[in-house]
Image (tube, rainbow, N blue to C red; front, side, top):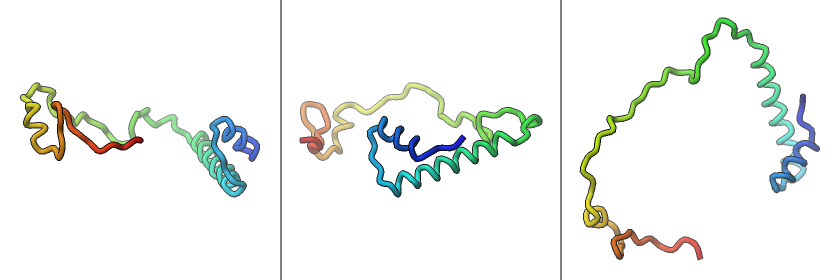
Length: 95
């Protein structure tokens, strides 16, 4: 199975993305390289390999979930450059 230029054009049209000819050809090459890599992985003999969800062992490194006192509203707003009506004021981002 390989990706064609027409496949890239169809998917880009569905995703409403526009690519020039050079980008389309680069995408075809990149996607085909990824598929070739996946095909190579499928050929590997993994019968003696134990299933894992991560390559490295993972352990929970979170702190205990214990309730602690939090800042009061006044303390939280004390270092804010601008506040009003008990809320942080920030510069307008969207017109």
